[in-house]
Length: 150
Image 1 (cartoon, one colour):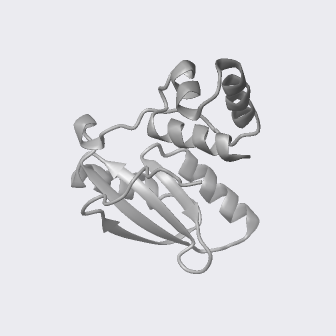
Image 2 (cartoon, helix red, strand yellow; image 1 turned 90 degrees about the vertical axis):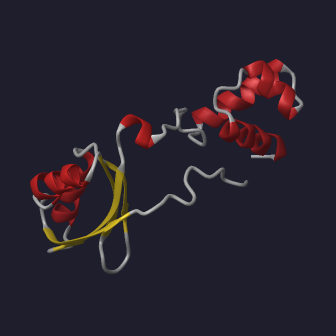
C-alpha cells in the first residue's frame, strides 16, 4: 500500500459515496488506474464494504449502554456458544473479546430504559455461560466513526 492508496482510503472515509471520477480527481489519477487500485483494495479486504452512518436518536434509538460480560467458563465451547448468541442479538452493535476480566465488552442499543431492561432480562442474561453482566449507560458519544489516519 503506497501513498496513493492511503489517499484513496482517506477520501472514501470522508465520503464513501464519491463517484469514481471524483475520487480519481481528488487523488490525482486518471479513471482506469484509480479503478484498478480501488478494486485491489476491495479484493484484498482492506475495504470491507460501504455503509451509511445513521443518526441513532432520529430512528428511535435513544438509549445506549456498554455491557461488560464475565463468563462462567472460558473453554472453547463456552466461548463459541456465547459468541453465537451475541451475533443473534441485533441490538448488540459492537462486541469485543477482552483479555482479563471482564471477558467481553458489548455496545447495546435500545429505544429507552424499559426496552433495555426487557432486552437485558430476556436475552442478555439468558446468553450461555454468563456469570455476570455489568451495565453502564452511555451519557454522550464524544468520538464515533472517526476517520483512521493512515
